[in-house]
Image 1 (spheres, helix red, strand yellow):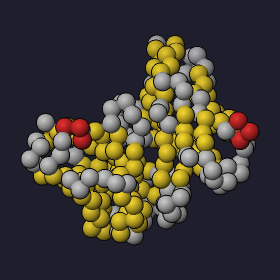
Image 2 (cartoon, rainbow over the protein chains, first blue to last red):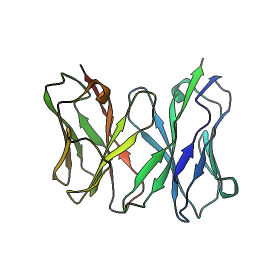
Image 3 (cartoon, rainbow over the protein chains, first blue to last red):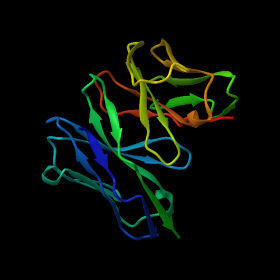
Image 4 (cartoon, rainbow over the protein chains, first blue to last red):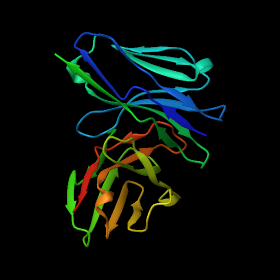
Length: 116
Length: 112
């Protein structure tokens, strides 16, 4: 079954700390996509990154970095030098194309609170 | 323009009311989606439209009725809702066969 697990429900850090959000996934597909979305209090889901199953290169974008490891079915997200504006709920998601369309299977989300 | 616009942003309705949620995108995407997100839960897929045709209905109750009048517009008609239907309703779109979903800000619906 397709499943995404984000074991950390809430994380609280002080500004400038580094923080890693964990994501573990299960899929029977050989080709799949993984995503991270940010959901601030305003509600919209902001796309952060997409990774396909054939590309295990880690990626860095500014203060954000992602570590994709197929061997452990993990796609972890690190924020370096966190800022108050990073406070949000972060969702890891897995694509499910079994119905012929891109259905996103979301993890439960991790609520990140960054305090000044 | 990479925006998906949803209106209204907030909606309070009684259980006997009929209301509609609206979603618009001008990115030329041919697939549009409705997701429902209950408080402190992840979004869950409700409907998928592709080329203005309903492709997926995730066993959603008939009190939710989607409509896609054209390739840029997606509506969700609501009738006889229950208080447990209170949630954030998110619209998204993707290119045909695309993987990156663009989401709107959502409509926060409260059923009283």
